[in-house]
Length: 121
Image (tube, rainbow, N blue to C red; front, side, top):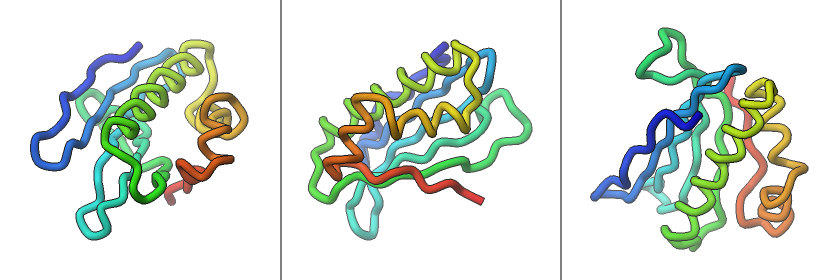
C-alpha cells in the first residue's frame, strides 16, 4: 500500500512516496536537479522511516524541458504501478523491469519522455 505521500517541496517542487507491499518496501523520490534543472526519479529499496537497510536501487531521468505538472503525474503513476505489482507478489527488481514493457511507461520510454532506469550499485 502507499504508506505516505510527501507534499511537493516549496523550493524545488520535489515529491516523494513511501510504498509498503508484501514483497518489498520502497521510497520513490522525484527531484529537479539543481545543476542542469533536469528532473530525475530515484527508487530506494526500503523505506527510510521503517527499514534499517535502505539503498539506492534505480534512477531515471526525464526529458529536458518537461514541466513540473507532467513530472508529478508520472511520479504518481509510477508509485501506483510499483504498488500494484508489489501487492501481486513481484520483487522490486521485477517490478522495475516491468515498467519497461507495460503501458504507459513503455510508451514514455519509447517516446523519450523518460529514460530507462539505471540500476544503482
